[in-house]
Length: 114
Length: 112
Image (cartoon, rainbow over all chains, first blue to last red; front, side):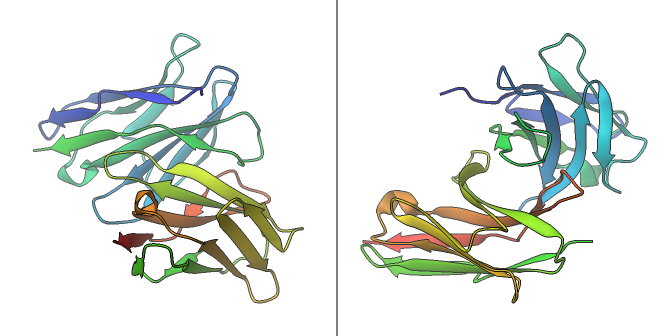
């Protein structure tokens, strides 16, 4: 069964550093999402992306965040200057539909900012 | 915006018994309600979903019910097994959005 994959599984970085989290979507999926989950809290929407454009973003997704699909396969989330409060699990999700339904999540990247 | 409340936060049931997790949503424009199962160290896994034009949906031991009037929806797991132990999230999606709003999750323990 096709799966969403994410790399790295765990990233440790110092405050102020840039990080790039990578996602490989399921092959026929064209709609992409990033969510985050701070330890012990609910999963929160960050951004949705289709056709090389952001469709929607939350208030969490400020100027420090960016997304792109650099090579037609990977879908990346970049945090320009990490803060302690960016420590969380970051999940990529992909969907074959543009309705927001049927979102399939990857295993996540645990980001630890020290 | 949409808000999803989920209860209980923790649930322990004896193996073989049924488990019920309940959620409410605030925005009547929500029309799609997925349920996700998250095992330790893994991402949320879509296990079942229901659309607002349906009152109930069943898939083997899992069923979801939706009461649009009351803005309630529930997950029912029958004949629970040890592998059902996980955190379960309810969620809602509004027609005009494509972002899923999650509940806070229910940690389900299946007791031997």
